Amino acid sequence: MLTWMQHHKKYLVVTIWISVIAFVGAGVVGWGAYDYNQNRNSSVAIVGNEKISFVEFNLRYNQIYGYYNQISNGALSEENAEKLGLKDIALNSLIEDKLLLNFAKNLGLWANENEVIQELSAAEEFQNVNGIFDKNIYYAILKQNNILSKNYEQILGDRIILNKLNKIFEFPAKENELQMLAASYFMQDALEIAKITFDKKDLAVDENALKQLWEAHKNDFKTQKSYELSSYFIEAKKSNFSQDELRAFYQNENNKFKYKAQDGKILDFELAKEMIIKDLSLEKTKNLANEKFVALRNQKDDFQKDFNISEEDQNYPLELLAKAKNKDILKPIIWQKCENKICKDGFIILRLNQTNPVRVKNFEEARAEVLPMYYSEVAQKALEEKAQKALPTFKGIELEFVDRNSIKDAKKVSDEILNNAEFSFFLSQVFNTDQNSSYVLINDSKAILYRIKKQKLNPNKQDFNQYQTMLESSLKTLKSSEIKQELLEELKKTYKIKIYH
Image (cartoon, rainbow, N blue to C red):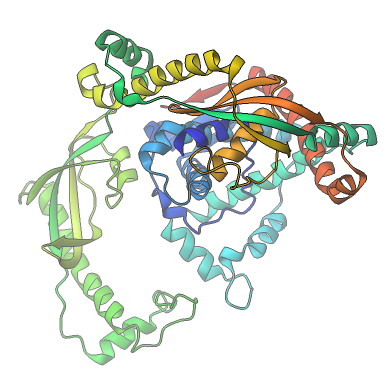
């Protein structure tokens, strides 16, 4: 599946619109999943006059991760996300956006406050059960994702400007262009196909070749950024609060919208009682936590525990730690300490003893990670040689006329030969090449040989009429993309790009 996705990424155009950022599933990989040095002013990169913020990068990365996770049926791991280069895809897409944003602003395009308000009001994520924008839901979701409203609204304003710019690239579809696209789109081939396989079990490891491969790709194998910490935990003691105390806390203006059900409705006092007791206990413990912070800072008390964390430990305040200096002590933060299946609420105070930056792994450290790449490359080379040798004389299964969107006939093509996803990928490769006889690498252990036996070029009128709207849309997108890519190449020469990683 990973190999198929890598090809899928290469040959299919994936457009991910972020006009209104969907927070559903935003926690797929967690905020702060990639630090990128958090520059200097918390920017991942600067493009011309536009910064790419840490928040923007994480939003884009999570959205792209979500897309690839969806097409892999929820089976995408962090390791495979790394192999697919999703963080680079996210960064490059943002760089392109910022190049276009610089250009748009130089043209005089901008977004006013009313346009931003309209976009916010239309976002379903921020609407109540009646379909009306609810500012309390809006602020709660932003808070949950550690995003300031001004930052989110800035991102939204930039997207509005880019949407205005995109209209410049919209060109009408001409009849002759439609006919040419239709001929290509509805082209049908009668094929003969055969499967070629290669077993990686028999591969021996050439240590010199393995080390050369590591040398060529060693910057892809790095340690994680880690932090050496000391901590002090202050447990929130639950007192026997009176009903009046609890109710007064519940009705306080700062708390009245805090206790909500999943449907957004405010919980009544009795249903929210356990949460109220917890929050009031924390409130009553806050002064003690601050006193302990001062004592630790003045070295009048000792930390309780020393430990290390990596940037994968999302429970810890990674953004604060990334900005802290060695020996800095962070102010108390609300914390839940869990040991032996028993959890206690309270505050934790952290001291950053040392930051261990990302570094390139040496060969011995990276060897186990390089091996799969080595096996894959050697196997793929052997598979290609085997396919080229078999191509002139192979005999296989004959398929009647198929087009690029044909569905697999399970009676003729079993899953052992090609599953549904592989069959779609195979057809996309056949129809994206001008070779009458060749092969398609499905992965590093399987290839499909093919030979075109017959071909139909002219679409029938019924197909053309049925798909005319889709063809017009595809043609407009194609023309727009071509022009936009040419513009981006020029903009890269105009605006300086500085990446912090």
